[in-house]
Structure formats: C-alpha cells, structure tokens
Image 1 (cartoon, rainbow, N blue to C red):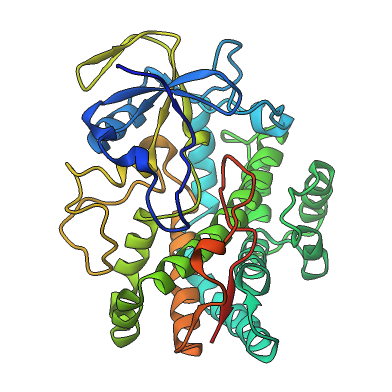
Image 2: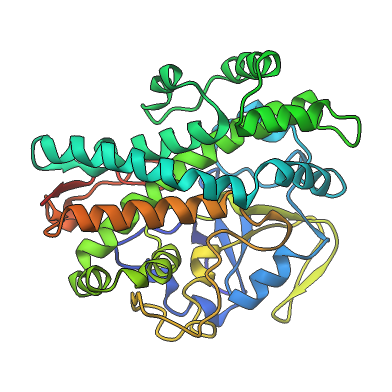
Length: 380
C-alpha cells in the first residue's frame, strides 16, 4: 500500500463515466481510503480477492464494535445496528427469512409487477414532457412492489413516496395487525416463523428484518431503474439491440447491474477479527475493510474490456452487485424480476425514449450510500 489515501466513495465524473480512480486501482489489491466520517479503512479492489473476503469467517459484519470505522459522521439509526450480522445469529436468521422469501413467491408476483408497471406507464404517457422518470415511475413502482410483497396496505403506502425511511413504530404496529389478521404476504410469513417454536425470530429481529426489507427493497431497486435508463439512453446502440431482441433482456440487466452508475460499497464495511492475507498483503486484526463491489465489477482480470457497456457480454463471471457468500442479497430474485419487467415495458411503450436534458446536467443526491439521481427527465 503506497501513496496518499483515496477519498471514498469515489466521485463519478459524469452520470455514466467511471470514476478516474478505477484506472490502475486493481494494480494494488488493498488501498487505504478515507471515509466520509474522516475515519480510515482498507479497500479491497480485486474481483477474486473480494469473493474470498466475503466468505472468510475472520471478516465480520458486526458494526457494534467500538473500534470499527464509522461510515459517516451521522449516527446510524438504532435499528440498523442492533442485530448481530455474524454467525451463528445471522445464518439462523437468514435461513428463517429464506423460508418466507422464496423464489416461488417472487414468481407469483410477476403478473402483479406487470400490472403495476402498465398503470404507471399509462399515467406517465398521459402526462407532460419531460417527465421525471424517478418520480413518475421508478420510485412508485419499487415502493408498490415491495409493499405488495411485504403486505403493506395500499392506502398506507403514500408515506413511503417521499424517499424517506418508514417510522419504526409504524412497522411495529403493522406487525401486530398482521399477527391478528395474517395474509398471504411476507410479513405474515415472517410472523409465522417468529411464532413457531423451532428456532424462532426474536421480536427485535422480526422488526429489524421487516423494516430493512422494505428499505432495501424499494430504494435500491428504484435507483437501479434510474441508473439503467441513464445508461441505455446514453448508449443508443445498446438500447437499439435490446429493442430488436427482447431475449437479450436478462443478460442486459446483469450488464446494467455490473455497470451500475448509482450506489457505493460504503455499506459493505467489515471488521477483521484476525490477521488475513489479501493478494499477498497482510491485513492486521482490528482493521476496517470495504469490499468494493463496483470496483470488482470493473476488474480487467475478471472482465474483458470492463469499461465497455455491452448487453451481449458473455463468458465473463457473474457481477457482484448483489454481493456474494453468506451476505448475498436476499432480494436479488425480486430485483431482477422488477428490472426485467420494468425495462422491457418501458422500451416497448416508448420507442423514442431519451433524456430530456443533456446527460451532464443530471444531479446526484447528497448521499454517500446511494449516489442516486435527484431526477431523471425523459421524453419520448
């Protein structure tokens, strides 16, 4: 490790150009970075090293440790730091969650996603141009989909439309209502897991997971949808290929996830509980490390011409945007379904979709985690 520490997260020079730090960053397996809090951490940069670190039992996600680096100067919300994310607690929780969050449940939701998508596109098409894709489509769709899955009543979803976190007391009250009157939804299924005698979720775990699934399920998906539209409209040749051959859609979604232009790996902060070796570098016990997924997704040792956006890319390894190992995103199947259906429908409905402003006029939110766009004006 040499030179001055990098400031992390990196700054995107434009809405779709890679940060300049990506160039040559993979020459060093571990680099020092300064986080928004001012604390120092070590950034893991290479694809294979990151996969190894994500499965290493000596690397902990427990952020309750007093000597772990702070991600930002803002205090982390209580519900984000009170649940143990290490074994044996985390595998137990994840196994119980998986019993409720099944691929079959996501597949059964596909027709409803199409229905919600169609309604939002109808409203967008009937409205003025340019329309803000984020406000008119991406966020409303993601909110409605995750609320459908979790079982949030339709007349109570409005409180989530302003991109704000749900109040903790709301989720607690909703859980109690679902316990009294269960339905065919994820929160009801989690309550059943909680109330069973064999390895039940604690009340704290039940509230935490329900809240985090809601947060992660709408904000990340909405920002990814906006990212996808920015990337496709900025690469009209790729958008034309996708229109001509809808069968390319699943692979296109994976490439859009690899080339994501929103989101950072700041939340991937980990703590090393014993000395580990990464790429020939010894990382001492007590270090704070970040597995930089967006950097791994541009590793030239893993991806051919990683700087090129290519929806027909094949034979390269899987993108790491959903992480890997024991913390692989539990909602990955839902995110993929939502992106595939939404993007296919948008391109079909609006053959002349384009940005309503020059791409360099798009503005990002002041958020070190999401780096989403404040708005994405589009015309058609």
